[in-house]
Image (cartoon, rainbow, N blue to C red; front, side, top):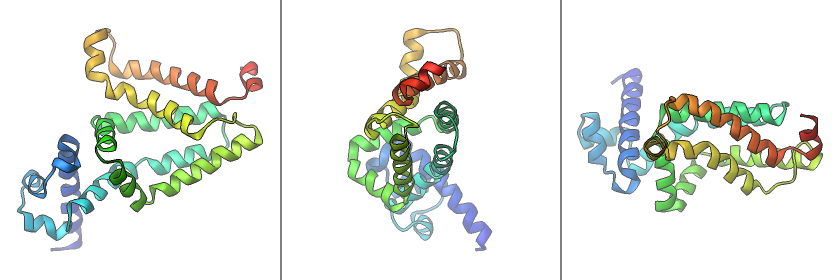
Length: 210
């Protein structure tokens, strides 16, 4: 089998495994489930991925590493806070619209086995991006570009605001029944998120100038 065929099959397996992991979660997914979804036998699957853990890492990397470098680069830019926040929101919204079940999957895996999720992140060196982002935020706090706020609070505020519309979408659509598309709601919500993050991060004097 040639290199191109190998690469194509690996991507096919990763796509199928992504669907199964998101549908069933890591614990409930078996290698046979993924093999059946791809349409190959288990021995064929093991040729590409020896363990379910390795496959999970490949799936997680396929999703997360498609946007984390972009988020890192946006944060590192020398731009006003509001502009960087807007760009970050755009990245996340595009990812979540493309993979609408991903936020639910991550939330479930954190609740199911947080150490496993942390270990997966560590193996993929995603933590290096997180460390650089944390250091950048701390440096900006020190020089007065942004207010001194708990990094944990920044994390809760931003991701809570960005992720929750996707987590609650099925229920919200039944409860509110508003005659606007989800994309329109997201654009209005984006402006709200930016205002909330500005309130959290921008120094008082910066807000007064706006």
